[in-house]
Length: 350
Image 1 (tube, rainbow, N blue to C red):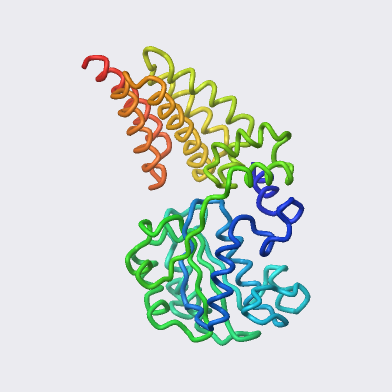
Image 2: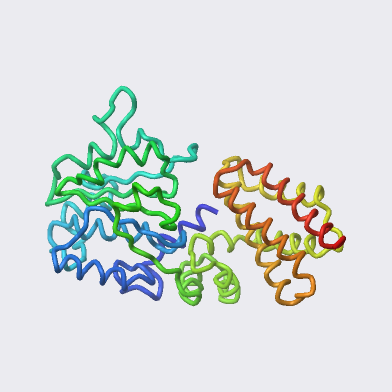
């Protein structure tokens, strides 16, 4: 699965959209906005990139950093030469003026150590310390914080001084999904840049060109459910998911939903993906999306049973919210299946 995602994210230079800004699909309007900003010499110190996951926000942030740190290109050109020492170091992943942090696999929030160092090295290490240092090359330093949706109040407060009094040579880019998921201390001090979902045909074309799927028919089917996200498309391209989708729909269609049996089947399929809790959450999230798709289609085709389907859809969306808050996967599966069973019984009685 990881190899499939890598082929989608990093194989874009071979696809038919080659030639767009930094070979990033669908966000030329954002690139043009930054060009105008740089031409006017009005680059802000902090930007918050928001939009659906898997649409290229992180890739865009890296492209922006590459352009701004290039030693041979002027800022307003928003292009990197690819030949200078700075470009070579970015390609190698060891540029001293580019700092990238994100959510560790074993954490549910961004730890404060990422920003101000551990207890023995408080304010002597971490992103805030490094961002305040003079650039090694060129005129600026760039820091990218992935997974900005997972700031805790403590880790957000670590950034407060940097946000209020940014170093003159620093650019900070935060990457999240929605302004509403950001803490007020972050949101109010950032310029928000919105990234749109990719067009369905763009997702399908990328899947075909990168070899992530075997044929165009599969690519179109996956793209239709991807919500414009390459990350979601990579998940949906897994044939095992599509096989389970049919099994799930069969369980949901039964006159009497068997919650215990369904929970066991769902949990078993979730466990197959691996031991990492994050992998299990990702798989369950896709299953919940399949169920939401099913109930929405039933609402359209059988409006006379609307109360039942609305209740089931509400339970499904609530389960997704629990997963987004890193709730225990097994408990969410149990709660969800019981909620679906109750919704069926309650509407049958009424």
